[in-house]
Amino acid sequence: MKATGPIPAGFRAIDGELAIGGVRASELVARVGDTPLFVYDLGRVRAQVARLRSALPAGVAVHYAIKANPFAPLVAAMAALVDGFDVASAGELAIVQGAGVAADRISFAGPGKRDDELAAAIAAGITLNLESEGEADRALRIAERTGATPRLAVRVNPAFELRGSGMRMGGRATPFGLDEDRVPALVRRLIATGAEWRGFHIFAGSQALDAAAIVATQAESLALAARLAETAGASPPLVNLGGGFGIPYFAGDAPLDVEAIGAGLADALARRAAALADAEFAIELGRWLVGEAGVYLTRIIDRKESQGRIFLIVDGGMHHQLAASGNLGAAVRRNYPVAIASRFDAFQEDVVNIVGCLCTPLDRLADDVMLPRAEIGDLVAVLLAGAYGLTASPSAFLGHRLPRELLVNGLAESIS
Image: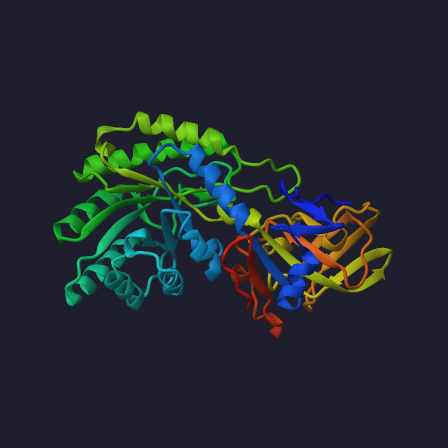
């Protein structure tokens, strides 16, 4: 038998069923008509944002990286909760613009931006986080041709990484950002052309659960920003410190102590160098804000035994929830938190494997887990499904239909 990840605090049963946003899972499925279904609880997102703001020093902005979950009703709801949005494509930009977000609240990061994407960003007046000198050349040419004044920040590839992060973004050769020793020259050049320089974007890693490591990385990032500013001879208007906040997916993981991070950042800001005296600061998060708010519901369509092992076969799978299958960069497959949503508080008596409907042995949602006995028709819940779910999965593989998505506990609702 293998352990599952911890079910986030606050989930409970109503009449024996898992409730999401105060509504039984079966009622939510009935509302949209069928499974599979992603449900996002806006109340949990609001609580995460409120906790973060309470922990952070006054004046530190909170930005949402919509790559974590670009579901349009969720993005629209986030517009009232966060200070800024980070996008990584023209498609994501259109979603944020569709939510009525002002241009000065949007930044655009990511390598390989096409010329038409650069042009759209410049025309809209959003901030481009430049990933290379070549990207800067193209942006400046487009601005000169159109007569616009571009808003340009520089993404920095720091010489350090975020210790213990699930995905390291610094301290190595990378397509992301400029190596730190090349940044000052580009900043001076941008300012000389008359562009509106917007500061630095420093992102060293993601999915870290070690608060001390994040505190240390934020302090290093502030020191780096100060050195770069001093060398460039210009104080940055904004220093985006990235994020890296993780959530506990697997057995043995503990929730991140964001209060300790806030206290550490307050201390680091109080001691910051004079070159950053007038700068503003932001934290950019995606997964930590929305990950625990999402639940993926899928229905059991077959229960079978093979060589003494029980398989629960569901109508969803890795084409919707790739990360839970272990195929999104995991070196060793471990179980996400899963539950029998129809029998959420029932006695656990069956060791089962939960597998999807795809014709591949990679389509596994849980291996050898102890759960209540489940039958055909019961609902399975994969938790921590609010970030890097549907849009991070191969939804076109084998031509199965797309799942529905639903936002609950808020004013917005959408079914797809």
